[in-house]
Each structure stands twice: as C-alpha cells, then as structure tokens.
Image (cartoon, rainbow, N blue to C red; front, side):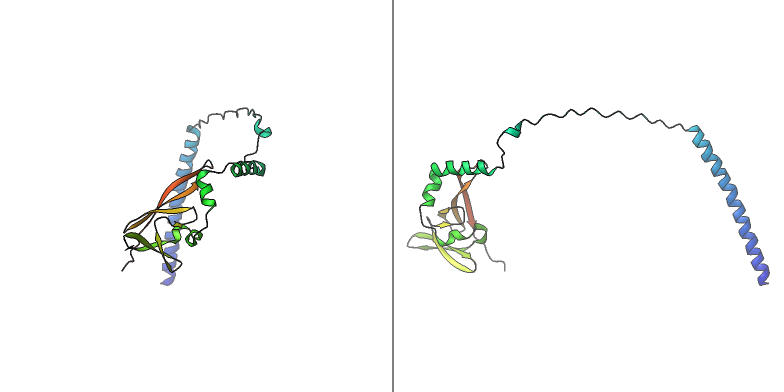
Length: 177
C-alpha cells in the first residue's frame, strides 16, 4: 500500500516537471524573438571639451592668511585706536566682565532710594548691578534696568574689523514650578 502511494507520488511529480519544461521552452522562444525584434538605440557619447587652464595671477599678491598682513593691521590699530575701545582699555575691569553674558541669569530687580538695581546669578553667586556697571566679555555697560530686563551696549568687532556698539539684553528668568 505504501509502495503504491510512493509510486503515485513519483509519477505525479514527473508529470509536473514535464509540464514545467514545456513552459520554459515557450519562454525561451519568446525571449529569443524579443531579442531579434528590439534594436537598441544608444546615442554616441560626446567627446569631452578641451580644458584650457587659466593662469593664476594672484600668486604675486598678498596672501590673505599671512601673518605679516595681520601684524600690519595690528600696528595700524595700535597707532590710531578706536575711540570706543580706547576709553574701555584705560579703565579698571569689574568682576562680572570675566564671565560671558550667556552664563548670567537675571533673577530679580529692586529699587534702592529710587535707583533701580538688578539681581544676577553667576556661578551660583548673586550679584547686584546698577545702571553704568560693566558686565560680559565684550565691554558691556548697563544702560537701563526694568523689572524684567537689563539693557546694555557692547563693543564688538564687525566683519571688517571695525569696533561698533551693539545692543544686548538679559531678561528675567522665572523658575519653572
């Protein structure tokens, strides 16, 4: 009985395989026909254009990264210092000028005898500042204090190397509850 089942299974398998080979013959014939009918149309590649190198004429000019150029500029600045910067260089630095503005946090404000003061936290220490005090690393001078903000002007170099005044502000930071 088992032997008959095996024989039937083998015969069925052989019949299936015979059917598959006939389909592949048709497929091969169709592929050959398509190869003969389709003619590829490949356009020829254009030859590369001739490269004409241009001579570099700035080799004899001043190197923009040379240290000699930097020393010349520094000497000129030392001979004729900017009026904004000259006043700042001749005064004594205040303690809060050692810290960048982004490390300072305004935590409050108060009035003493009609004069506004702001409370700043820097390195977990509390500082009391008034209008006219200096803070930050860019010669920042406090120009106005309100309940929510400290306005100051800084002296910074612009892209061309000129010293200019720039407004800045520290705003009151309320602690999240």
